[in-house]
Image (tube, rainbow, N blue to C red; front, top):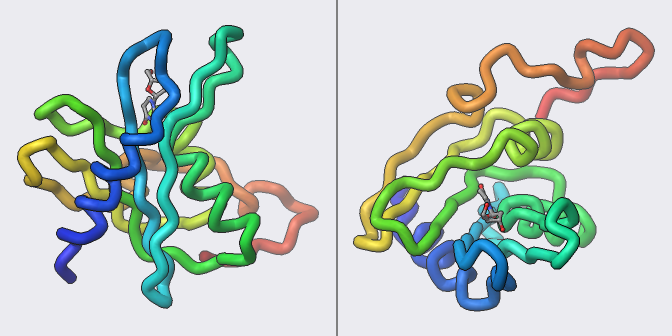
Length: 137
Ligand code: THU
């Protein structure tokens, strides 16, 4: 599948980044299985730990609107280098979207496609909780 439009959407999503502290803008674009795109950007806070990453904003927007099936998420920053998802986002992407495609993009428009489990091998998930019925994503 050609993910060019998804990569472009992640780049555009950076525009709304609120990042006065790090000055590191991040955009994310999440593709649902039925072809919808939800975008997100990082939103920082003067109480630094309250910052939320672009990936989580995109995922929470989608989940809060009833989406449950995802195909891929693209991540963009202003660096002409690939920006991988942080550890917290890896856990949350895996929880809500499972082993989806992860697109790392560069400002040049180039991108690379990985699988989520390459970033989070041997994940902790609902399958590890004995009393919870495990739903495969
Ligand atoms: N950030 C993201 O939005 N996503 C990532 O995957 C890496 C980090 C944000 C958090 C913070 O606002 C800034 O980038 C610098 O860490």
